[in-house]
Image 1 (cartoon, helix red, strand yellow):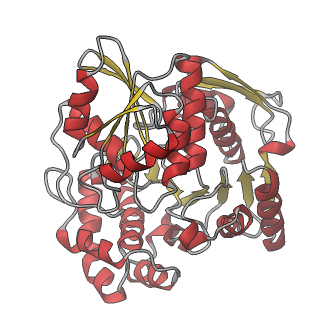
Image 2 (cartoon, rainbow, N blue to C red):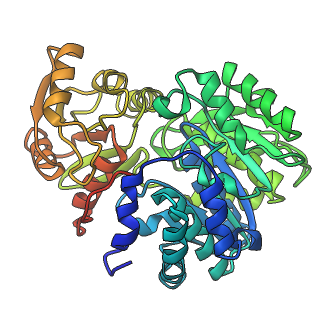
Amino acid sequence: MNGDGVPPVWLSDRQRFGVVPGLERTHALLAALGRPDARFDVVLVAGTNGKGSVSALLHAMLRAGGRRVGRFTSPHLERFGERVTIDFTPGDAAALAAALGRARAPVEATGATYFEALTAIALDAFALAGVEIAVLEVGMGGRWDATNATEPILSVVTSVDLDHTEVLGRTVEIIALDKAGVARAGRPLLTGASGAALAVVRGEATRVGAEVWALDDVSWGATDLGWDGVRVRLPVPSATGSGVPWRLETHLLGAHQARNLALAAASAAALGLTEEASRAGAAEVAWPGRLEPLTARGRRWLLDGAHNPAAAHALAAAVRVLAPDGADVLVVGVNADKDVDGILDPLVAVAKRVVVTHAVTSARALEPTEIARRLAGIAPALTVDVRSDAESAVRRAEGVTGDGDLVLVAGSLFLVGEVRTLLRGARPESGRRWQ
């Protein structure tokens, strides 16, 4: 990894292999590295939406409880090193560099894919850094994801909805069955799934002998605090603490974050953390690019990936609370392999005008002209500007707004990352990305 946090070419080039289901390559790679994952406890977090937020919240709670923690997440927003966090340091230089150096030969020998290699590198970095526990965000699905080559002491399935349907299946039930593959016999499986997805997750987890705890089975409450975040009150699945329901708040925005906070708190309790540690972690967590408010260039900005229809609807609902008149401008880009209309429809409903663009680093990004064509069918009266990259889209958004106006950036985490870099005045990432 160079000084700009860019992964070596030998690793980046493996993105061309795409996604190849199966755990045999990951098992072989981990064996070649001496099974680094056996040197610490593992928590697996799967789900369609919310898994990153739950991972970030649980990571912060474990740190507040005095644990040395690793967190593996994907994709990264601005820098490759964000994927591997040790305590609160993204891309811990020494551990990650050592793991990258150790991994090349076995990666090439096993034919591991990019994500399989990243998973093994992260696990090796965690072992080299001496973490006690690692929170692993599943990349896609669950059963055949590289992270599932580990043996978790706790598994989590957040929400289940339609996404990656070309790989995981075209119904919520089929997708839920795949995600439930992270369950383990004799271990807790906590889930925020609802409806038909919950029934499938519960059935599969019970079949393998996991201990199931579902958020929908308990009486809990949530309060949307607007720009201050959310508050939850829930009975946790352990006797830790006083035995009364826990009360926690986080600054993460949007009513949907209440379920994520509740699920993270329940996970923390199941791991033996106290309410005080969990509350402290929830209060200090940061999760960039997920309904993240920024003030820059005289404008207010809200950045959120919202890369599938369910996430786009959740974002639109949050905008209606935070800005009842809607965003003054929506800057949007979408990946071509997504449900484009399903993402655009709820987003344009909370925007007064739109600037369409794409992430120039993303090889999967849909051309802005095609997004504009789709918008003409969805909202023909809407004013739509087309720009070729994030920088020109940001300039256009500035040009059609005034001081204090609200600009919403959404539709792709790749685009959100590029815009966030621009707004912070940082150096942009180089190279092309597929994952």
